[in-house]
Length: 451
Image: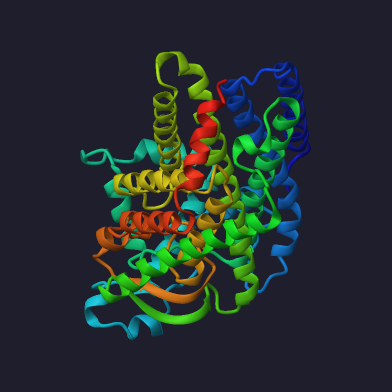
């Protein structure tokens, strides 16, 4: 469990930053860039605080879940387990599943069980080495013969090593791990919303300025449901096309990573996880970076342009590039990430910005799209979502070995060939549903905001 020192720092830091924000934001003006930096600090601090508050009960619940393995007596191993993207003790796919595969789907010389046993053995060896005394380590290093010269490991080398251990690409963890990972994401979302509330209270900024306007409950519900429908539809499009092209293969239905676990329980943790992801990323990237970025850039650079409409267009394009770049970079260290995933996610960031404008400057459509995309891809249709591990899936699939450049490998379809097409299709659906009237209205409001 967190130490007293960690609790003290985690509790005091948000309070100190809140006082600093209150002092710096006193006045009637809206210091856009100061607001943005304060938001990032507050979001991080409060997100960590809420995570710790949720982590304690999550760990207590986790030890009572079926199939759980929670090393409560070792804080180091406990934290490592909560951060893992793949549990090497889980044997997946099963021997029966592998035996039923066509010959050209089987990785030569390596069965799924053998692959996972290799990973388990490597993990055990690593833990054993870490437990040796420092004197033994020094003697071992002193007596070790110099290794033959070799090129410095690159990302491609690491990916090859991962593919050797996971010939069928997908990451899996236990439900007892997933609930703790969900606590982190829900904590981050709570931190995002609370930080936004504080900054809107301390400054002339309003929820409308960051896309969280609630014109009516009916309209918010319509936007969320529309986004959910669009996001899930384009994932289904990818899935059916991959199935048709034989890049993936259905192997079962309603399965959990560990047979003794309960599907509905595991699925609940996945839903909570992606609710947190959707709120956190949409508010931070599309609300604070895109919407507020448009206003901030336009106010700062208005004198550069004779025509305000041209200035607004510049601010919109610049903000799209900035938030899309950050969106891609946030996934840089996700399992299996490559340059292709960065490019595809940059395109996805552009699509998300268009969602905001089409919906009249609100985030509810984007939140619904983001959640629908993630939950359908990762836990209904059994595909990897940015390398995020799964503990269950409604439709269980195997990505075809050797076709990683087509279906995206460990990172998933967001790194595949079909992702850009899906983003374009989703944007077309949003424009067809909403038309261009609200988009134009939002741009007009942006132009006159500098008066």
